[in-house]
Amino acid sequence: MNEENIQIIKARFYEVLDFFKKIFDRLAVWVIQLSWGKFIFLMILSLIMGGAIEDGVNSLRNAEYAATLPPPPVPPANKNADQQQAEQEKADAEKELADEKKAGHDKEKIKKKLHDKIAGLNVIQDSDLSSEDKNELINAVSEYLLTLEENSPSSTRISTNISLNNWVFLFIMMLLGIKVLMGGKKRAEALAREAQKESEREALLRQVAEAKIQMMQAQIEPHFLFNTLASVEYLIETDPPRASAMQRSLIQYLRQVLPQIRDHASGNHLGREADMVAAYLELLKMRMEERLEFNIHIPEGLRSAAFPPMILQTLVENAIKHGLEPKTEGGSLSVYAEVAHQKLRISVIDNGLGFGMAKSSGTGLGLQNIRERLALLYKGNSLFSITENKPTGVCITIEVPYTLAI
Image (tube, rainbow, N blue to C red):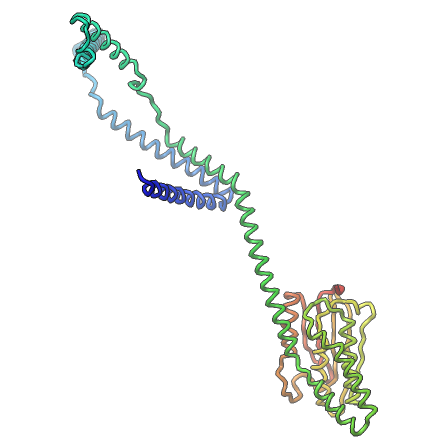
């Protein structure tokens, strides 16, 4: 056998081994996934079916064996029991004698064949023994071989029948071993794979959420910046000292707000957002003068509460742009913060024209961005509502879980 044939045989062997391994793995997975109740029910059903099949097979075998038996002799009606018994014993004796004669005849035939084969050997024919010695040697060897043949274990019929129920029981024991020994391992592997998939899914969702938040923050329209710069340009010609003060306030405000626009973390605290809104409203106060009044009511103990960046700023901008700025006489704006039912509640209230009453050229992304940011950051554990502030204006309320900023 050359090397190529050996490689082919090895390849075929590994293919067969891999095939049986796949079957075993699928069987193991199927058994492990079964509940114990279903497993026990299946095993009991298998034993019942195995017993029924075995009983059916045995019945067929018994019927076939009974068909091969000769019919029992029918004794004549005029004979008594003693005569029948005597005749039966005589028939049995004759049968035994015939069997013995047949066995002896068969033995003689076998002995003659052995005698002829041994006599035909070259070692016997070429020997220097006399004819009588050769015949005596051949007869002795024939007798010995015949004795070995009769006493050989291979000639003895050994019953090794195993019932179908025994095979079913062995199969059940194998399945039970698989479920007990491999169940823990398979479950641990499945849990590890599921945990890895969940981790990868959470990481992907987190990346998507951060990207969306950054995109939303980039869409915030800084209309106040352009209006403030226009006011500074106007005041430079009419009131230079006031223009200089507005410019300084604008620089201070930008130093606070620009890092917040770039930061997308949720670990921002409410106090920093309140300071940024206060600087923004101070700028607008210098531009709108008596047309704007504002109040910020945030307790000192809540300034360290965690609050997403730029959301409060966007709400205040929306109130100014769509509520107070279009109103001829202006109005007031208030910001409140409190804790209710373990939630941080922020309210921005104005007495402007009201929601949807002012003509606007805006994109409408501000409030939509806030809704989406809250949904991404708190996964449904937040509240965003817009209600009417009677007699005029709008009240916007946000509720988020109350936690301290990191």
